[in-house]
Amino acid sequence: MKSYEKLLAANKEWAENVVKNDPDFFNRLLNVQTPEFLWIGCSDSRVPPNEITQTHPGEIFIHRNIANMVVHTDLNMLSVLEYAVNVLKVKHVVVCGHYGCGGVKAAMTRHSVGIINKWLRNIKDVYRFHRDEIDTIADEEARTNKLIELNVQEQVMNLAKTSIIQKAWKDRQAPQLHGWVYDLHDGIINPVFEMEAGAHLDPLYEFDNL
Ligand code: CO
Image 1: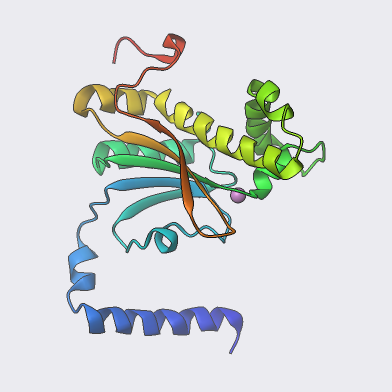
Image 2: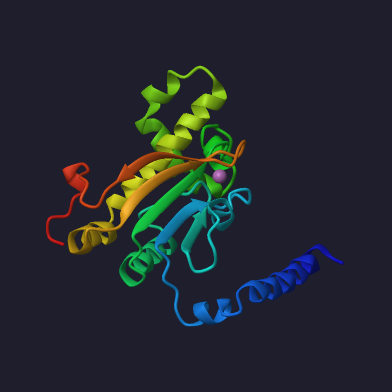
């Protein structure tokens, strides 16, 4: 059996098992999805959102990209955010990074990786904002992990800078924003940053006419 055929066979087995355990499962999800969470995570194959949180289809709306970035010109991310916040009305938005993230590691080097340079430059900016704090750490891995945590924090703040989030905070006092970092060593998620609805950021980024 070819490797991709294993996926299809496994899928068939999965669908059969789901129905066996919960005959109404697919009917329930057929016409409606009401996830409480939007997850913005890294594309890394070792950080599967549903598996590490023991959640099921229908529970988490998911957007993934290299190094879990919230880039304010990214139409893809913005469309997902808009839909999750204004149509699905999620209560929580989670930005989940992970220690040992290859995207963050690459951004800390001076090595060119082609078109990905343009994406990684957003992470280099985070490094530059926090250079004093990061560069005091002697150990290379600890330095990388610090940037990974600060990057997650920065991406949560990037969410708060959007008119989408600010309008939702004003209209329905939600969603709450969370910055988490997953540890590949033990599978544990470490919460590192949070913003409640209505939290303040630099006034320069707060719209006064929403
Ligand atoms: Co990663």
